[in-house]
Image 1 (spheres, helix red, strand yellow):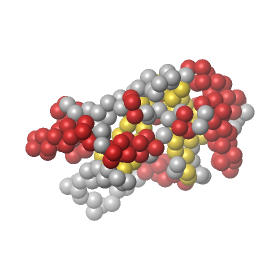
Image 2 (tube, one colour):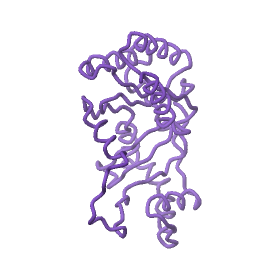
Image 3 (cartoon, helix red, strand yellow):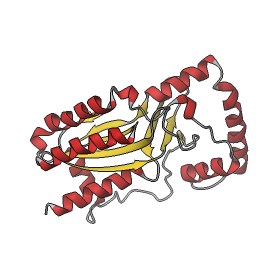
Length: 236
């Protein structure tokens, strides 16, 4: 789990997004960002069995000096209400659906390199078709298990960002606990509830060099961040 405490990342983000931020004059518009490892081969993922929804949560400590102590209170509530991290994991192997249509692969290619290359698209389709066989081998099963384990569902980077799954009753209990922390002026939070999660993958190789980014469907983190920003604005 990546953990960064303090407000350094938030400060850097504000500078980069500021109007006066200048990019290097030597930057060439012809340079291409290397996104060769990025993949979006999985369809929207339904919650695991016995879960009803996917919850995307972003929370910040109002007192940066007490960040570790305050954010740990949220983690404690997640453990109490939802159970251990593996129990609130929104990604499960039985719910994974591999996308192999030309439309989906073409859309991914546009995001990755900005255009569609026909022969590369056909090549990718054949590789994906082989995926159905690969995921039934021992190596493929190992990859799927690693993918679930390495799914990026909790990040602490000066704020708490997490995607979890559970029942409506559990979410009601969580919101009650978060509202109390907010009432005590300890945190501010934004939450968004959806029926599915989405996953983007960065894969260099299928053995060990891969990581998987999880978000709530319908722009979970974006929607939760919008709620949080409104709360922050109300303080000023």
